[in-house]
Length: 169
Image: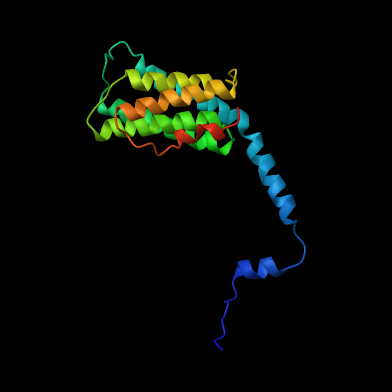
């Protein structure tokens, strides 16, 4: 029989002490802390969507974007994915992931079309915090359209847009 030795660490000693708070209380406190950050997160999401719109609708932008602008859009979309996931904005999360898939695919294929990105950004605006959320059927139609765009370019969807039927409004 082989003995397993667990070294004594400061954390192990603290964990073994009596007292502290229960696991459920710690989780509840963490969830309250996250929830208190929702207003700031919502503002950040709206600012990120606005920043993407500024890039797309700049006076000097034609039907194509620069590589730098594409990378900037990807950074903003990634920020939206992170926050939408953290605060359970499922529809917004799917739309932002689809935008990331699109922009990444365009960058990797040397393309930089504005129109398909614009469609995705309009979907983000539709599903943004504080907007009137679309019904499940309406959201499914939007996700079908976003999937058609990815399919048109033959981009693989890493965002699970095709699983939109499981999303609650």
